[in-house]
Length: 349
Ligand SMILES: [Zn+2]
Ligand SMILES: [Zn+2]
Image 1 (cartoon, rainbow, N blue to C red):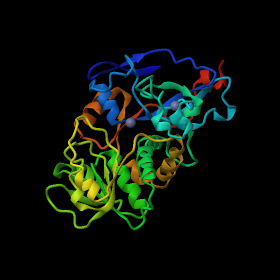
Image 2 (cartoon, rainbow, N blue to C red):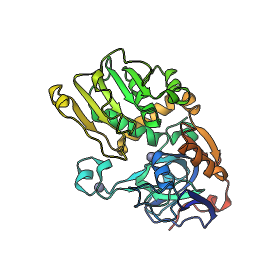
Image 3 (cartoon, rainbow, N blue to C red):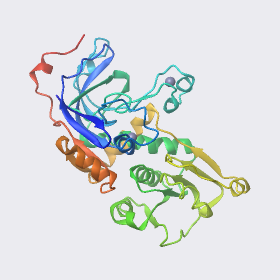
C-alpha cells in the first residue's frame, strides 16, 4: 500500500509498505479522505512543543474511511462500516478519564502524531476509537466531525443556553469558523472577527451561514457581547476585545498559543469575567458533530480544497500559506472495496 511518512522537517514522502497487521481489538481502515489540521502543520515544520511526534510518522487524525478487517475480539457488525476515527485515544483508566474528562487523559495518544494515522491507503486503530457514520452522510466530508468536535466541546464547556445571546468569535480559522456557525445554529447573534486580509477567503464565507463579520481595525463592534470565543491563537488578540464584553461575561479560550502573554487582571475581577479554557473534545461529542454535518453537508462540501495523495506536499504548502480554509486529501474511492484479499478475509487473528 501507499503511505505518507514525515521524513524530515517540511518533507513528506510517499512510500510503499505492507498493509499493517492488526491486533485482536483493532480494526483496519481503508482511508477515503483525510484532512490536514493546524497540529499537522506544526508537526510538519517541527515546531517547538511537537517533539513528541513519532519518527517517520504517517500524519492524519481527521480521517474517514471503511473498516475492511477486524480483530478477533471486535464485533462482526463493524465489518465494512464507514467510520470516522476519534483522534484522541484516551486510556479510560486515569483519574481524568474516570471523571469523563477524556481530552485531559494523562495517557492520551493522538492518532497521526504519536502513532501512524490516516494519510495512507490503510491504517489501524483500536475499535473503541471509531465512530460509525449515520446513514446518508457523505463520507468524504464526515472527517470534518473531528475538528467540529473541538467547537462542540467549547460550547459544551460554556454551559449556557446561547439562544438570544450575542457572541464574538475571534480568529477565522476552521475552529473559529465552526464555533461561529454552531453558535448561529443555537440561536446566538454571532460575530466572527479577523484581519482585513481574512475577509475574502474566510470571513465572507461565514456570512452565508448568518455570521456577521467584524474586520479588526476597520469597524468597531456595534454591540456588547455575552461571550468571547478566543480561537485566534494570537497573544495580541487574546484580550483585545474585552471592551465589548458585558459585565459577568465569559471568555472561552479555545486556541493554543506559541508565546506567553501578559494579562492585567483588575478589569477581569471588577467585571467578574469568567475565563474558561477548552481543550480537545470528548468521544460523546462526535454524535452531535456528525448530526450537524449531515444536516449541512451540501454547504460544508464547498469549504475545503481537495487534493490527491500525490499532491500531499502542495496541500501542506497551501495550508501553511493560509491559501485554503481546509485541505482534504482524497485517498480511496467511496465505493465498496473490491479487493479480493479483503473479501475473502472476514476477520483476522
Ligand atoms: Zn487536529
Ligand atoms: Zn486516561
